[in-house]
Image: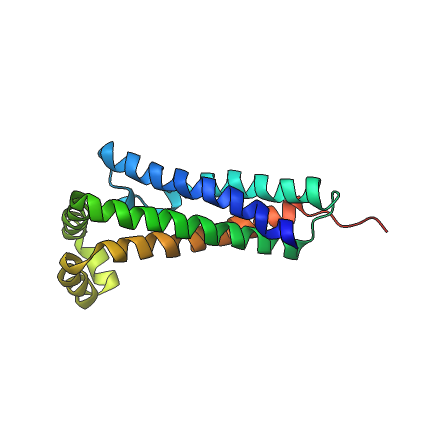
Amino acid sequence: MRPLFQVPLKYGAIAGVLGAILVIGLYYLGRHPFLIPVFFDFRIFLFGVFIFFTLKELRDYYYQGVLYFWQGIIGSFFFTVVFATIAAGLLAIFIAIVPGFLTAYIEQSIEQIKGLPADIIERIGKDVYERNLKLLPSTNGFDLALLYFTQSFMIAFFISIILSVILRRQPKT
């Protein structure tokens, strides 16, 4: 069981630092990373690569070519926990140091919400629209870090299932 936690810890730590650097880099490139739709998020590619190498190393070097589905899921989950904790922690620190990150997010989010067409506002509901506009200025750095943390789990969940199925090998009977 030891490699099942050591290998994801190593890859999760590397990916967590890289994930935080990518978010900060996107911010300085002029595109606020929290306003990019989740299905265009760089974490999809990042998780795909890192979870693949995590599970492949577990299977090939520690489990003699046999990786059960449950081992893949546990390894992927532990990778995600490490990634999300490190990346969200680094982002919380960055947001505390650079308050412009949070300010830009709030301003751009308000602009984005006010630019919604009337039919979309009707679909989501006028009360939800008004509530979001009212609550947005009270957003803080912890809220953004928590959002990044939870989104990481949602993205990684589907990638984990797919890669655990692809990389699993059953023992030959």
